[in-house]
Length: 266
Image 1 (cartoon, rainbow, N blue to C red):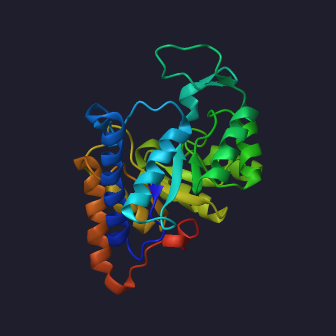
Image 2: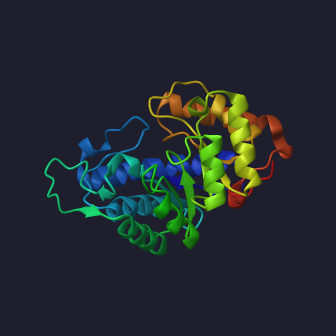
């Protein structure tokens, strides 16, 4: 994912994101062929890359070609619960020809993430470990190398958020309104996170509809972060279009989070 934090307003951020996305498509087309430009549920591309760094390098190249070096940061949604087997992480879980030799411990994953943070402008990693791997999530969070976002770890559940706050197991909340149940409960989860001085990322869900409510929720909650997919599918664009309308309505009274994406006031 990319964070256009160097934009002066959301309109410019949207332009930066869209231009980078289309340059990324061109780069992938040139390097891997047209088949690699097919898009997934969230509008992302799926070229036949062989490593994490190869994927990040493609995004960096797109940012560079768009002319936004230094103004766009990177983020990852690792979704590590999906490739956790027992207490280890299978980095070949999507491979048709598994060697069975690429299992990593939680400590190994911390080393991988730490190296990525040192080599790339990576400022946020979502769900870097299994939903029940509180130990390694805490170890990584305490390094304070980037924002560590709890998704499956928290499930927007007040008790799990309370535990994570007390144990410093992450320092940001993925807020999925349909996951927590009601808007009232979603707002309570935001309050918990903000009281702990956490970041808040309002998120869509895979297979989302063209309902734009989460755009209003992100602004109303002063979340500072929204994850709604690539700027190419109707269910993604409807959220971004609503944010553009909101910014236009606010006019000079509106404030784009920008560099303050983690500390936007309530």
